[in-house]
Image (spheres, chains in turn blue, green, red, yellow):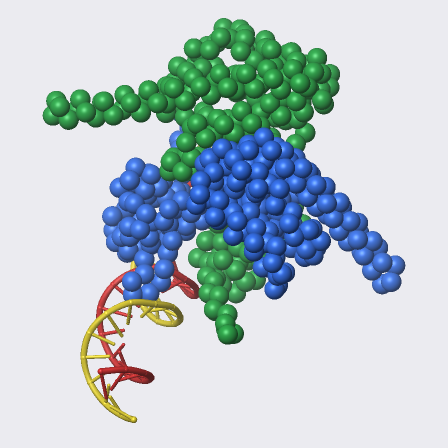
Length: 250
Length: 250
DNA sequence: AAAGGACTAATTGTCTAATATTTACCCCTG
DNA sequence: CAGGGGTAAATATTAGACAATTAGTCCTTT
């Protein structure tokens, strides 16, 4: 039996999205290229402008194109980045589909490997970059935002050095989520850590000692993770008692 | 200097998206709830229906709501799932921002941990599920699609058992990408593997032996990864020579 | 010459209003 | 009481107009 397949019911805009996406993936359009104007696409696809716009918006949301208004405006194909991955992660956290401890468990798992790989692939240029970061990290900071920025940088650069773009994407996403958490929970978290917290890791990487780098990173990730978990727990606690106070006062 | 911040220019639809998203995240709307009809939202937000529709479409694309046409239709809030994460990964692969070897390196890193955690949390119910899967896996298969389905199931269930939803999301995404690759490269890949390929892993998990489970999984992931990498290499090779043949013939 | 302003053309952004399509539900008939 | 047809509610799609943004051109004024 089962002779008839259900009629596939797709929205017009979805078909447009799919066609354009395929063109981009197949290389008919490359990063930097300009897609035809909306009104032209309208004629080519023989659908209304609304449909075209919905399709372009979908492509924009998934990071394939970028749209500008104005004289030289239009829709331009851009390089696919890790942005979307990161925001998918962030959404999952905001919706409480993933918890902080779960995230740090993964960090403890993958970041040592990143450090290990980085140590195996270290070059003079990378060394220089890392030394610059150490210096910046250990000099006095101006603002809190700068401080957070500075202290995530080491992780970012190590991820870039490690040579595995998948790991790089994961680490960068994790750092972005971590940043969100810090902003939400306690802006002072990072400052409470010693300025030289990354030095042992970076030194082992520069020395080209994979095992030591991995171990140093593991220790760092564990320690930092525990602090963050405790901090978030305290934050939630205080929120709850805050609500209770409100109730008892009001 | 730097006294003026640039005027942030947001589209109307983006503001609508943001407001609705916040409402969902803050729990004003829960999964299953129905958002007001487009025409009503139109009045509430005081914008045109086009803007509302673009906003709803964006929310749909990021997995927050689902829209149905018809009498009991409308826009319904749904549970955020890992779907978006997976499709972000798949896009990155299709755009060649991540390679197969890079992916398998990550699999070798995380799947043993998944197996380890599963072994530490094994329950009678989980045991039963795993035994069922083993049985299914080792019985003759009907179709190829079923075969692939069956052989990914073990990984899925272990990921669910492991108790870390982040790891679970990663494993499921990785499996989905792997499936894509298999479909693209060679539909016969999985069948070439022995039917009982997951037995050592599952047995160690059921026995509650974390280290053995992790080691068994590591071996499996390494082996399977190498086969896949080689297969994909061969596939690309054949594609190239195929093109060359075409050229020499045409 | 240089700076600033006005105009123009191209493009996306937004709105309004109408029509098409889908779907659950009610009612009616045989 | 089963099946068919109508109805209402909602989204899907279209068309056309107007608003806003932006780069470039050209012109005027200093």
